[in-house]
Length: 232
Image 1 (cartoon, one colour):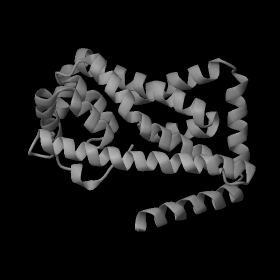
Image 2 (image 1 turned 120 degrees about the vertical axis):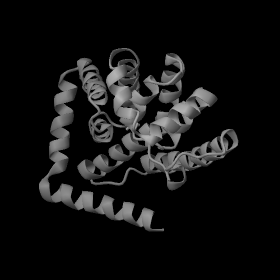
Image 3 (image 1 turned 30 degrees about the horizontal axis):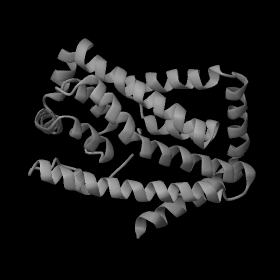
Image 4 (image 1 turned 135 degrees about the vertical axis):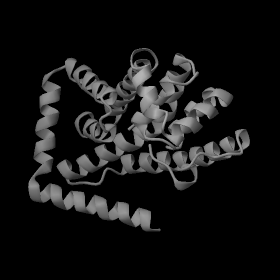
């Protein structure tokens, strides 16, 4: 029970700090600047996000910013496109442009050896499983899959699909908090979406664990310890 309690404490702390430091006004100003760019606003954000993914910068922070700026619907679309494009570019860099350097970097890591072995034997299902259950860090996976035998479009499609629930959770969650900060009210419809997506993620994680146990007797280290979500 400590996890939901900790989440509640964090949300309350964010609300208190936002009131003290005027974060709501800053978020409104940042959103106004993006909106002033018109149709270029989402495009510029996508380029920045994709570049950050290729540079192996933490995507979760940018995802949170997207939820605060664009709201739930447009935020999910922007982050979904940006994270998929960034993951695809990192995959291509790993496969065609920096293979020797990345191979040398990853060859000493036991987790990469397990990923390579499982991907060779089980193919596309490993992309879906690794995206649903975060056995490996997001940026590590982007480059690591480029060194495996998985097909590019298989990797792109399953990465996009299986990162989507996590993207929704991050973006809608941020939008709910930002609305509570700026408008000083609880956005119950968004809370309902968060609960639904959270239940879906729990189901997907359990299914992924079961399927991986069926596919391979040896479960990679970290699979039994929990989940994370798009990105982040």
